[in-house]
Amino acid sequence: MLGHLAGTAGFPVSHEAVGALGPVAGLGVRVFFVISGYLITTLLLDELQSTGTVSLRNFYLRRLLRIFPANYAFVTALWLASMAGLVVLNRYDVVHAFTYTMNYYAGRSWYVGHLWSLSVEEQFYMIWPALLRKISRQAGTMVCLGVLLLSPVVRLAMIVLFPSQNELLGHSFQTVADTLAAGCLLALLWTWLAGRKRYQAFLRGPLFWLVPAALMGILSLSRSWKFDNLIGQTLLNIGIVVVIERFVRYYADAPGRFLNWQPVKMVGVLSYSLYLWQQPFLHRDNPGPLTSFPVNLLVVGALALASYYCVEKPFLELRKKFQPKRRAAAASASH
Image (cartoon, rainbow, N blue to C red):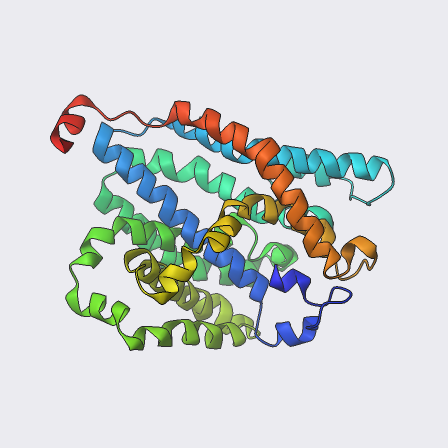
């Protein structure tokens, strides 16, 4: 949101000033992908351990109830706004938004441009749960390591062999899969990492803070496409994994208390609706009353609240019906 706010009318920081730090908005999406890979894999592993399998039916029903209603409400509202002449959508915007293929559509307009990352998420959901259900934990670890190693090669091959597709670089699933794989790997190695005493001491110590500092340094070097695609993105993924692990494991200190502070938690609760609704109003190339700071941020917050309480929350309640049920042996063992 900072990356999109920068340069909007009335915002005190210019787009160029924020851009000097590197692709800040892209870093936000990358963090989201790593968290998603970690969270989804943790849930899948918990279900495998407690029930002996993964119910793909229930998994997809839970994801559908979580993702589809708020997204379709947003896209429908945009479509109606375009019919009223309030916004201008490109020819296939609505089709790709409804089918979660926006990351393969280079001609998307600004209003739906952010939905490329939601499309990546849906494609991840279609592949990873079914694969992890079929293979062992060790095999899953090897798959994730393989994706981490091969993705830079895929990106380079795309740049060299398919230059006409370079607009999709960093958006198409095959060019960002390593970011999700990094989060999956963290979940798969969670127990093993807990036993690495020196590493855990590093996470708890002052030297850890070199990691987020290094992330910002690596981000500033992303202007070099060779460095970014071959090395930089991999280093960013690993660094983000370390940061996430640190704050998930050790949350009792001051940074942890801040992250668990109620207003910050509320931003997390609203994060999906904020993600959806910020795009039309954080629009630096379309100055107007509703796209000028701070009105644009207030409007986004109000719409996110409406989206969460009127659309998301009712379906989240319904989703509870499809939570995994512990098998009897596992349930009795837990007592």
